[in-house]
Amino acid sequence: MGDLAWVPQSCTLPTEEQPLRVAEWDGLFAERLTAVSRPGPLRLRLDLAGGRGVEERVRDLAEREGGCCSFFSFTVTPGEDLIGLDIAVDQQHVTVLEALTARTAAGGRP
Image 1 (cartoon, helix red, strand yellow):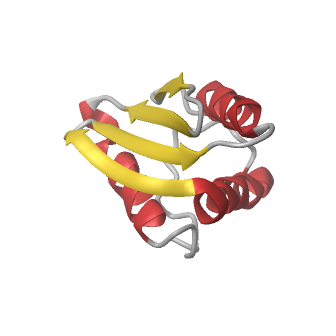
Image 2 (tube, one colour; image 1 turned 135 degrees about the horizontal axis):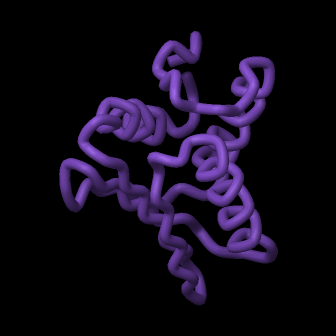
């Protein structure tokens, strides 16, 4: 996934900004990811370690990602020590969700 070939054409984020966005997700995964699950074929559930500013960081990143890739649906569930992030897509974009799942399994490493 290092070559960004998995980014769908429907993404409106300028090409030169895509590696920066991927790096933001990678940083979040590397620093905060505690658990990953797939409650359904079109859903990914991430548990992220909480802390000062983490919820705002997750919400900001999810909002910006949803702004350029409107096929994503993000739900942030705050908790005392854990932040839940549910990511859903339509059937047409399941491969993008699978690529994101693989990225999380790698702990944010390409």
